[in-house]
Image 1 (cartoon, chains in turn brown, green):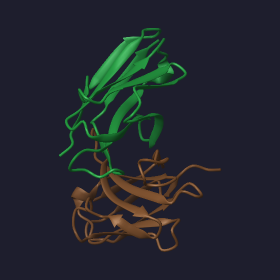
Image 2: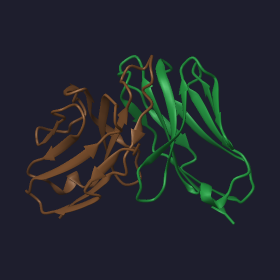
Image 3: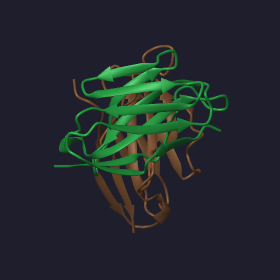
Image 4: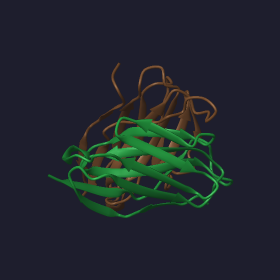
Length: 117
Length: 115
């Protein structure tokens, strides 16, 4: 089937506004990840879901960031009171499982480019 | 804390040349290493994944090697083509202080293959 999809592809918002970014993982993938990529840098880990639960949210920069995956498939990354420094490309990835002893190759979506004015 | 470095940051070669991209990581206790390709304004495409027990993986004109003990990986591209122009990212999972699932990326090598 289809790969990882993300919507919207671009989001422009004003400082202080609330945004939601959506990720549809590959069907059947139990593990889902969010990363953030700034210009000229590699992606940085934000959060990892195994099923419905956030197994590791240690990469979220502060409490304005929150992510959910209520049914173990689609995930939404939510950013409150956006700041200019939040501008980046937000990438979502999924893998069959999260266990490195099994198949945890990560497949990435096209990303959402967030611009905070 | 695991750190990943990619050298060179940018590379320009004429079409047809064989080339090597380098990746190094500070903590050899990795679970696996992945090479990705990223086209401008696009997401990441997985090229090759090497498990920590493996020495190399091949896909078409691409060959990735892993020397875990020295903390190095190379991506070899044979007979380069203009369509290979992109940014190549190396990422590892694991390390003594890092998790088994979190990819830690280098900053990438921007490759330009000139016709």
